[in-house]
Length: 214
Image (cartoon, rainbow, N blue to C red):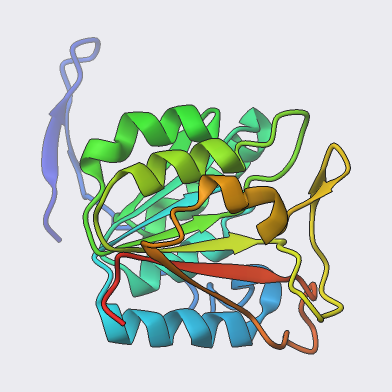
């Protein structure tokens, strides 16, 4: 068994310590991505097969269920979590995924810092909708200001004509009406999910294709 020699300055004893790789992750480690909604996963895979995203960024890591699914799809995944306790609990899970970069902080502020590291075509999954500050408008402004091809997926969105769950901020639903002033409509194409998985959280989603070939 190969290893490396480590010397102890206190005892003068040399020890041969083998490097032990972490065990591989479970094959189904991504099963709960997008709140256990396989239809959303299939939709994202279809987008990926069409556009070939080379990088992903996620806001709202939570327990990392979606993060590990993204890590199996895309070469590089940046994920951002504002809750320090969640960040500490979840980060060890990513030892199996060297292509995941886990960051802690306000998602809009961290996203601004890592913009130079993102690569395109980009997949952006925006799911940081909790607390007194709603970062979604600031996240969108940062991403849409970069005139490069990307798919932005907003979770917990109000889908017209569907009984899907969605988030609200100060009484304003997360909807096209609320976000319309932030969106360059001449650069974007929009679509929604039309169904949800039978065991999922039944949440609505908006997909924004920004400067992607149609």
